[in-house]
Image (cartoon, rainbow, N blue to C red; front, top):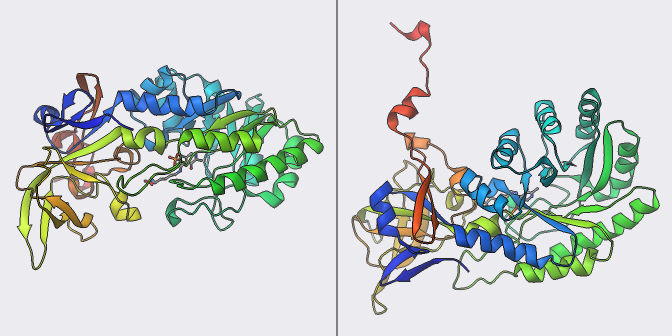
Length: 423
Ligand code: LLP
């Protein structure tokens, strides 16, 4: 569910008409609904009710400080993967003991920053990382709580670029090797083993891979406890999918996911952490763009937009589908014809959708991409020297720019011409 609906024939974000935002900030822009964000967080929180738990928002999905503040105010913890993300969590007041640190390539500098600033746990992904962490922690006179991320070799049945739980992926430690790695970890100074971590992929639309992975985690918990480790925390990762194509997709609900958690690992007496990103932010955001030209090509029409692959890369990168709708509601009887929806960037990959049925749209019309709140703005670039597009947050009838479009002057000033090139 989200709060983007047509009212009086105009698409709104909560109580704000999108053309009003377009008039104020120009297109293209991202717009997020505060009510949707908080609702999605609460749905996860409620799904784990009755179990000791913490929902750690995976901020890689959308790390705008305003979004983080909104979720932190609801009590969210954060899952971070870099110093930058850690500092964002801190900037909105999330205490270290609600931040988990994930990622396969944590550097010494990142370890130092995070240990000094306070951390709930490191999710360790390899033996070399474990040794370095032990060294860095010892040097700082600290003992850091860790889980080891295990790779359960489960097929998440999602896009190859976002599947992480197969043995061929770079993530985690093979579950078969886990006991040996935990034995090693227990001996190391500066390290305190507290639990197990698993994350098998993103945009999962079936609960079966979760069930399989969590059952393996349960088995491992019992084995590790028998080996003498105090396993008291399970980080089950994120990955629950959202309906990108509303007409024919209905992924499982957080409630049903919570039920799988309960049925598999609910009786272990462990504190449960989850790291959802997409489900919290995805359907809480739109990207709004304008049609620059409608071009009649050979046998097909193109809508050339002012947004491009650099603003929303998911279609180009993952062949991802986003529902695309006119901001002015078409009449029910309006004829739909297929068009290719493209951006102005100089490569054919800059295509958002091919032969998508849409009512007639022409130059200057506003168009909205649904489900763009996660992995949209955060993956944007300035390719073709196109400024990063602004982000807007709506709450009720108010809206605010939460990241402004840079000026061309700001963009150009970031580059420096060396003295020896100046004449
Ligand atoms: N935890 C870990 C360790 C992760 O690697 C990820 C996502 C998450 C949690 C959050 O997963 P979510 O709940 O958002 O599915 N850019 C891609 C998605 C990459 C996901 C990477 N890891 C996309 O646009 O589809």
